[in-house]
Image (spheres, rainbow, N blue to C red):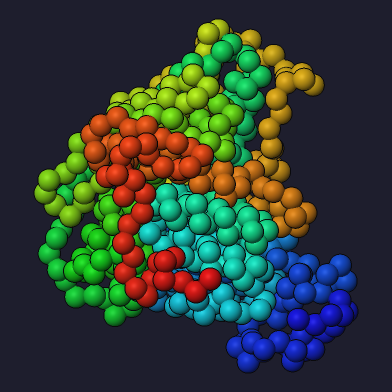
Length: 468
């Protein structure tokens, strides 16, 4: 790396061992290279995964940030890749910014480019840990969609690597940047409802079904790599994501991989990582977890989709609080204390077209048993939590990278909220009560449960097969 902070882009590329691959890349200088005197202080971001969440949430969230530039896109589906490139270049063209977005079919190649400051990872759940760790080891800052990982083992390693590399990190738990969720947690932690004793979390559930009939792999899709570290399986569109010429309808449809346990654990982590994260924030248990868990669920016996259906989970925490998660509860988080309750939800807000919308009284985003619980302003001695600028989750990440101060979520906080969901999933799968040691991150006297903290990884993919 060159030493002079006033070096030109040509000098930088000449000095870099990767200068050859920079041909044709957007002529934007990474701010970290040229420091305070950089002609461009824009943060250059690589988008990994350009499907439903990437295209509808994370890419728009980055594109609206003036301090950042989305300079490269990566996807295993070439149709999605072309669409993402067109989206990026069309956006910047409207702003009179000439930028030719680089395209990649393999994130490993994309990460080697010296101009990339940060990555946004919007891949299926089984493809979270590997690119996140790879990016962290290269010193890139990271935004990754929730849930953090597929297994407890992966989560611990991701958190440790991100902390060691001192990467600025944000996870897609955008509820943390929503004012109503922050206010609810501030009120609970400031004692507005008295001593907290119960938290009730309502999550959706998934249907069974899905075609198991094998069909040819589309020529535009690298299915072999998409499977990653999971077992080899016959291709069907219901296993991955919809194909077809109508891109808008393809992105609108909820992909089948969300309903298959090889790639996602179901709503317990899909939505659970959102609401359990808020529960932890309000309970002040962000860096720990439950001490006991008891869950039950119905699992499909036929069809391709095998994630859980109806479920009920109860988790006890060391602070004498019980967290109850049930598909019958309204979608949201209800904190119950000795002097009242607070219920918080997204209300009518939708992130994706498939998100549930509450109706009637439950649709109000912030409610309390007594008006004064919410109407009385917080005092100087009350708890004041991290407030994302403009309530913008992606801006919070951008600001973190600029200031080198933590964003509203850390990798460890993300790991702990995801862990609680996974512990609940293990209990549901086993159908019995479990005892959890959150410090050692292991179940007490239960070899079967402990074996489920990780899973076999098919080479050459998976974090176990990475060179670190």
